[in-house]
Length: 144
Image (cartoon, rainbow, N blue to C red; front, side, top):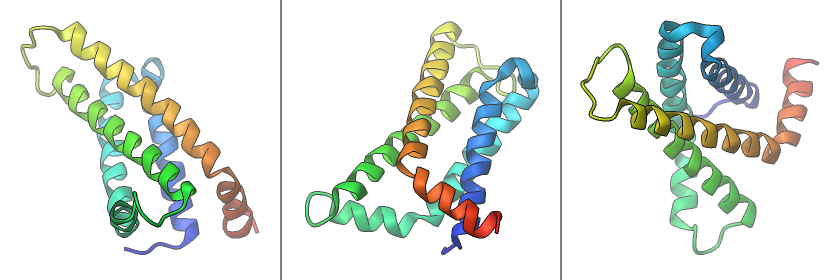
């Protein structure tokens, strides 16, 4: 799957906006929070699939011939993937949809919040790493 830069920008903006909105539980309410969280998780999987060739290429040469920048992006992206996976798994476990009888609901909720906070920090790092591309793509393709 190969996308134009403007498409990648829009997907990234949707991921960011959806994630920020879903974190703000007081604004969305629980039902929208759950649906939005699921939608952001699905979009994150799509984003990963769209960049899968890059993931495989960097994985194969991670300890060999690849740039420091590619390794940094890879590690941040791996952290984001783990973070989103943890958010979705813990979110589903504590959701009203499954209504699981958890031995430690508060423990699951604490992990959900911690994963969300750490993932948000990684999102900020990713935006910082890609800041120049974000601005130039917006100027060139979205705001000509």
